[in-house]
Amino acid sequence: MGSYVITIPGTVQRPVDDSARRTLLAVVRGADPEEVGTEEVPDLDVLTLDEPEGTFVLRLEVEAADRTAAGEAALDLARRAFAAAGYEADAVGMGAPAVTGIDVG
Image (cartoon, rainbow, N blue to C red):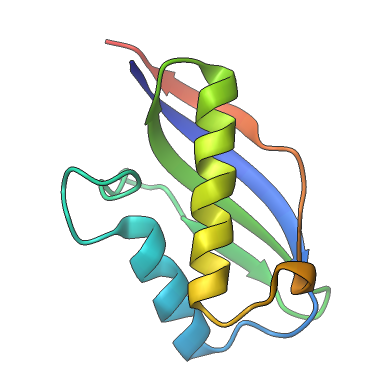
């Protein structure tokens, strides 16, 4: 198992207001230290939004056996976070997850 930082680009069909942002970040960060995405990586900006363009970038830390599993775990976490924030699946487009950091030690 290793710790992976996964970057997911995407688009939203409606703006992410403060309430939706708080909910999304709460899901991503979790509440239990044993959950995926709970540890906050120093200097990691978890969510970057470009409101006028309707684009976002999520940077998530997940534990996984390999790159493929890490990408799948990050996409699943991102989908759950947007759903909790009130976004229907078809209102959020997500691009391919990219590994942007690995700590296997």
